[in-house]
Image (cartoon, one colour):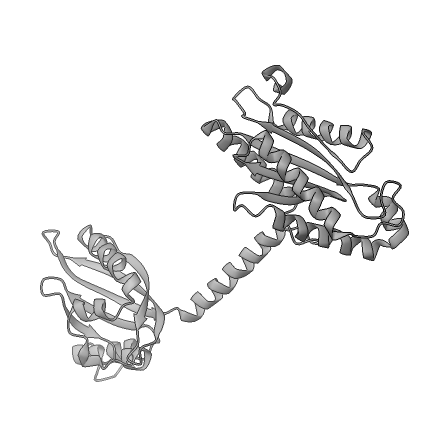
Length: 324
């Protein structure tokens, strides 16, 4: 090429440059700032979106061929960044001639005049549809993993991790709003013996049935039924006073009684029964939430000591009882 007659030939250089640009998958474009008209857009735009190259005349054509939910935000952002002289990127859904949409990433470079005013914009459009699909699949996977991390693998209801986070959040809410918060701790009576007598597979099925049964009993959107561990369950009842919490405990026991799940090794009933500890509080800054859970557990212990198949509830503790 040293003796090429095209060397240093401006026309040749422009032809080579244009050929290289138009052979890429990225779609080059340029816009005159004052007139808001396209001074150029690559012919690849026809293959990608279906709109003829010559139909891209003004910025309004670009805006009109954008998804209505992306239009205002994308346009306003690009104008603001351009006026500030900042190169930027914009992801949006572009309308194809056939009525469908694909994801586009516009990479924009701002060219300024000597006085600092915007002269023109140049950039490239990239088809990022496949990347967006991968991102959506990843987001779905992440949501599923997060859901699994908060879901008990056996019963499908909330697990201990979700209980801990939910209880801590509702404690703060109850303290801020000075509303009652109730918690129930539930233990299935003689469930170790159930597994010994009926087998662990039947024991697992029994836990699943009870979990679904009690989930339907606590149907308010903010109520949480969780598996606390083993054969223990926990229920958080936001904005629920002591009387209402006791009613929930009675409903859970009645639902279990009506289910008539056989328990051949129980010493107190031929069916599966439970013991429940119930407690309600309007927490303050001085109260310790872990101490409160310990007191709920003490109520559960007392219910067992009273012969099981019952609940134990009491009035809210004094401030001294709930300080760490």
